[in-house]
Amino acid sequence: MGDRNQTVRAYVINLVRSPERRENITAQLIKHGIDYEIIEAVDGRDLDLTDSQVTVDIAPSFLAADWFRPGHAACALSHLRVYRKILDDGYDRALVLEDDVTIPADLSSLADAVAQQLVGAEVALLNFDSPQACRVSRRDAIALPSSRQLVLPIDVSQPVSGAAYVITREACERMNKGALPVRAKVDNWAYFYNEGIIDRLRCVVPLAVTKDPHFGSTIGYNSDASLKARILAVITRHNLRVFQRIVVRRRERIWRRYTQVEFVDEQPT
Image (cartoon, rainbow, N blue to C red; front, side, top):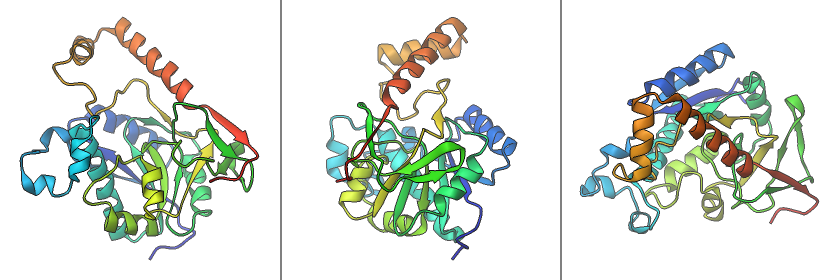
């Protein structure tokens, strides 16, 4: 088992076919002196959903969901790879990052400060979003570096995101034991909480890690044959900078709307 006072190590999830994302995130981590390891992501494009050896790890209800894409299962399996690596490496707490984020200069000290507060099977989100302003409790808020706070969401189902979080060893153990077959999206923290897989979910506010608007999701929400997917492919392939800027600004507007926080005096449910 690791030392509680150890510096938190970062595990970065990256698809082999996304070298530009890997270069971007590793440059940031090196610049800010953060120890990290790249974990090769499971690629949704490679999942053969007609193969019983593949689908045995994915619950039928998950496969049958209207919103299901192979990328959802691949994302969950990728994070599970990280949990197993954290356990193998013997860390008590670790920082999990997806490769499309922008990190603050003080991420190392911030992650360490957050890690010191976590007990049991707990997860603390450094990035999260919600369609409505995420309501968090003023009660028991803990001061963190750079005028940030570690807070409890009033409704655990509100904050979602697997882009950046600190997780404890016990949470990794329970995830490893109970996450298969995949039954929920990787960032459906309410599911893991309600199933008793994690004991508590907390959030860091103001938002510490942001998503880089220059990178789109690799989940594959749109079919490759869809109009939107074809337009984005043309923009990327031909380096149409004017249109790229439009896409970036649109993502920025969406994320600003989805990352609002409201402090309340209520007790979390």
